[in-house]
Length: 112
Ligand code: HEC
Image (cartoon, rainbow, N blue to C red):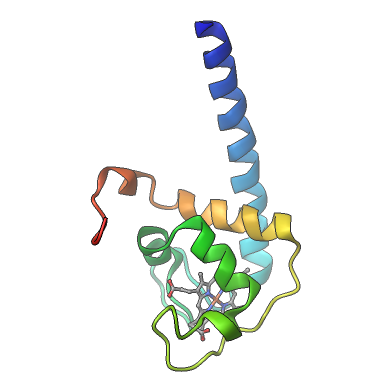
């Protein structure tokens, strides 16, 4: 039993890291012109901040339809285009953003 749990954990970690790698490529091709990952600024928020403050589900929601989500996310206007990504690409880029701040799991988020 222990071996099975161990094997599943390794498998899950391997699959997740493949998603993160693919998500990084999606990021570089579609998001990097507006969102930095080294706090260098840009039109949209740096993804390190997004990693701390948003869940993966929220990130996917935003990519799917920024024009419908922007008020809920606290913006007065929407400058982010709706990008023609597949569902898998959205999931992968959300995994990549989520992976930028691995220690956040140990922090208590406001309101949780
Ligand atoms: C043309 C510039 C541009 C591109 C390209 C772009 N964004 Fe954005 N993004 C913005 C701007 C500007 C905002 C602020 C809200 C708005 O204007 O809709 C934003 C907001 C967001 C938010 C909400 C941030 C928050 O926590 O409040 C997320 C999540 C996001 N973008 C993800 C992405 C992802 C993922 C990609 C690539 C697949 C991407 N964006 C591509 C400009 C861009």
